[in-house]
Image (tube, rainbow, N blue to C red; front, side, top):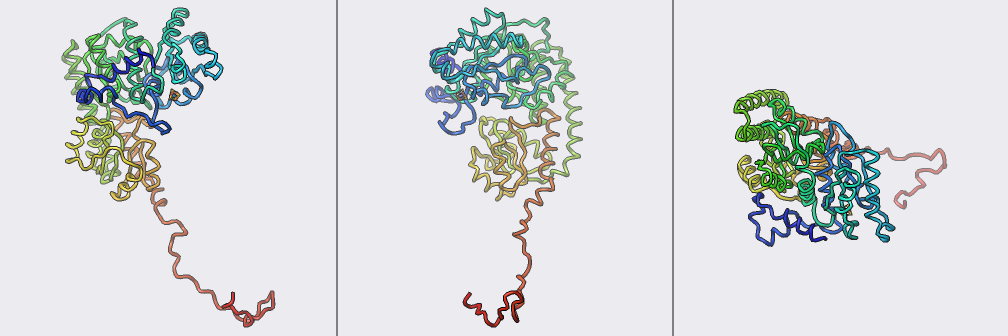
Length: 492
Ligand code: SF4
């Protein structure tokens, strides 16, 4: 690993804005905040994967992966970020390095040619070039190639130095943020700045979640100047340094980016969430308050409260129609972070009983909130082995498991409905409307008539009554002519 990359990694691990990190010893801090990967285990993504997840939602740029073919296959569009315009981000570009390129040292030349091809064919506003394990190990200098290509072709080429072997997906997210800070943010000036310009950091518009929130901000006249990186355009990211406030959406991964935006450009940030009704209201309220503190018209606060009151009333009226279908249902929640409590409170308000919630990746604040909402901490658990989850689902007689895709088979084995609430899901659950969609998904899952059939005994398990005794054989067999009396059945 090069010295510059080593230094960068140490820098992002030492995050003063992260409460958990500050409480660690010097040595623990050096190890970073993610568990080290286990070679050979399905560890849930490498650093390159994390960088790609964070940057791929920039929809109008070309994402060029300098690697053997498989890396792009691994990292391509694995989260389902949505775009309201260009689809270029979903085209997979890779240099497809071969053994010959490695042995002959052709990697850098091949990368330069690939950048030229992409620019000639698609004329993107920028090319993001990702380093991966193989080129990083053989020492390909993607920074130098990007610099030369940008000068030659007049298109920004952004090196993203997050080869898979340096660490986890979370670290990759952070390194992606560093690439934006070093090469993109601050490179374009907006034509016009307003006191209502904000950055939304850490929302990737997965399955269109940003679109459930943006109309609310539009109604208040708040403009998302810098989107990092949900449904983002290159220009939008480059102009992020002129926003008045940054909202960091449910993500510790990009906290370094938010903190550095504050240090370099004086943009204050807060952490908020668009999951759950009260969280959405709190986030909008905080955003408006901070905008007013930074020069927006104070009437924004009044308009904000009016909007929240109207939306909450509308959403609760809709949820009340669904209440009879979900009330009393027992839910096991296996997600993490802020969702460990923000979803709990919403489900409880609808009369559902949460029998347990995982607090994986949750901060101490998150855990305190869970305790507060659920009364004690006996319903909180960290990681859970599939066998244990199966037992809990059966013993606690849960009606539904809400989790990520990896646990769905545990639920199905326990003949239990399952609702996907993780990043890979296909339905958006953000904002006020998102809560209605989530409750509808629970309703669809738990009230599906096929569960009754599935849980009923199989035909061969059913009791068919007493066994019918065949009448005794008498007389002579019409085929063989053998007399029944001649056969000694005892000998058979
Ligand atoms: S970057 Fe490395 S760890 Fe990640 S997919 Fe490529 S080879 Fe695998």
